[in-house]
Length: 176
Image 1 (cartoon, one colour):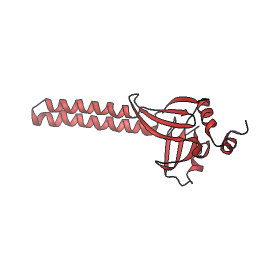
Image 2 (spheres, rainbow, N blue to C red):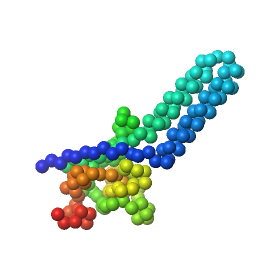
Image 3 (cartoon, helix red, strand yellow):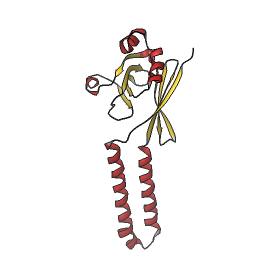
Image 4 (spheres, rainbow, N blue to C red):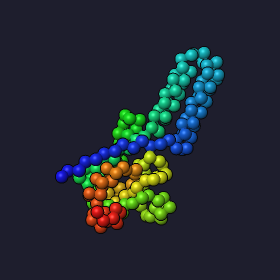
């Protein structure tokens, strides 16, 4: 029987996101101020400040839209794929691997995982810190030893559980 499940998780705005947006806004307002009060009297051409103002407003919009992230998890017959969706417009593949290659899985604890030697750490959860998230440690051809932190629901966990090696499934979920 084929197994297919998917889930979309929206990343919550963190303090880092707010600081990036605030910095972009302040930078844009400084550019607008300079263009109106310094460039306009010097050039006597209202077109240059108008272009700077329009570019600054577009820049603010662009930075805000880049911080609007969603992650899509899909499990198809043991293959886990995570895509990043930026501002509901652009999709980028984060990682794709067969869960039979998983070495470990469980609830994510940042302190415990900090000790590990990893080639790549990918955080694709609701928060940047990985609170209330799960992790999978697997070897992938593209990244090597990879830690994926994600926030799956029960259906995605059931899809992953079906593809895990038997001993790892028992270690993580217990006996059925």
